Length: 264
Ligand code: MLT
Image (cartoon, rainbow, N blue to C red; front, side):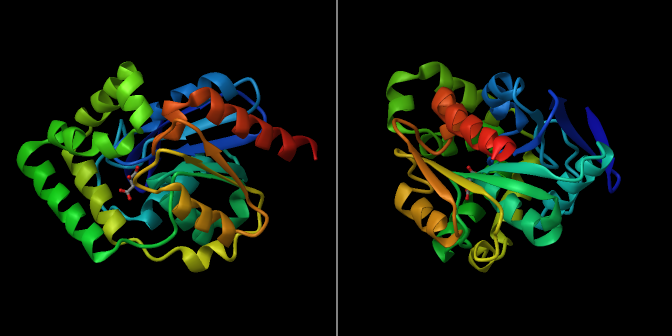
């Protein structure tokens, strides 16, 4: 489906019924990374997976920022007449979730924050992103897929799940350059969300793969400790894209969390 938000086509899937759950993808992927979650959770809730502008099937129309992405999500919820939803964000999806909280907090029923961090980029991180912008504009999306894939998946996936590895590479290699560059600029420009975490007062589940090298478990534990009352789950044999690498384990903890929201 497509919603027109601020003259920009934002693509999304909307399946199932009941408690609305919004899925926000990682960089540089798109909403299809949530297919294993939607397939499993559609019986339990209403799953809405959104392509951030410039990625997947959403138009690559500037501006690109965490605030703009968050407002696009609010716009999709408006178009569906949904007042409140559980927000699930993985990595960059988590950065967007923090912006969504700052701008639309009354619309958040609960959070699932996976393989993400609250702090801003370091100087080295910004320099690396500038290098990726150069790579994307000169060599294209396949070069980005080649550069990113090793960090995105864990050792176990690299060694034992070649189909998963290849599927992730394929998705990245088809992403539009403008969207990749826009997302990199948006991540460079994002604010420090650590003060934001101290204000989160909705049920929050924090998840990390034990083989995540981009947002390692120690860093995600710090995020968990900064959100009062949050719960931390560490998934074994999963890297940064824990939901895609170990879908059954990821879905089980999310399903239990959603059930507790509904029945407690
Ligand atoms: C992601 O998975 O969204 C990215 O690794 C986030 C980042 O580069 O900071």
